[in-house]
Length: 271
Image (cartoon, rainbow, N blue to C red; front, side, top):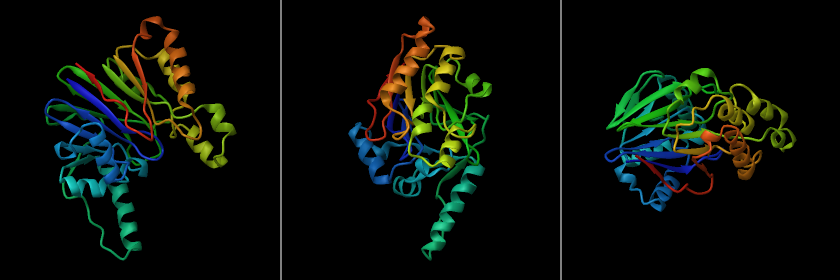
């Protein structure tokens, strides 16, 4: 059995748990360590049972609680070399401002996009995504014949990413903003341009195009993730996705869930 539990998803913090019978991987640590522990316990997950922390990129909504959580749990952290350099640069700046010495992670493991590696009985394949970070990646998790895809924070859907998302049994994917809400919303124009750029975030409309044109329909569940609280609404995101899936009736048989910023998503089990 494979289980995915989304603890939080959005611009204020991202974290999800991928679990097999023997391995538990926390993907990103964008909540505080205390809040991560609290939400895990709400989902009947034991923080002390975590095997590792896996980081997609260095933006604060994906790493804010990393240092404290890794030190508290004493488990390895996996990230790319470029992501580590960007993260540690921020740590040095914070330490310098506080008159302290920067401390690196005690247990650090590096991976490269395109090269599979194992954490326990989980095979992890990271792949490059288009986002304005040092070396951002999405992930495929292979566990006992089950494939779970997890990809957020990408400005558009290139063919390479669509290829990696084929034959997924479960898929968590970004549906960040509604284009009209973003255009008329409160963000400064420079931020709007960044979000809409090819290294920004995936819109409802762009995700709908992927579902209507390139998605192979293999997943038993779909999770819409990283919804903007300012520039999206859960029902708009859901309706846009359902309409696109409905254009291909054979794909319109799946469980569709929306990840939340404020509370964990009910755990989803497959296998």
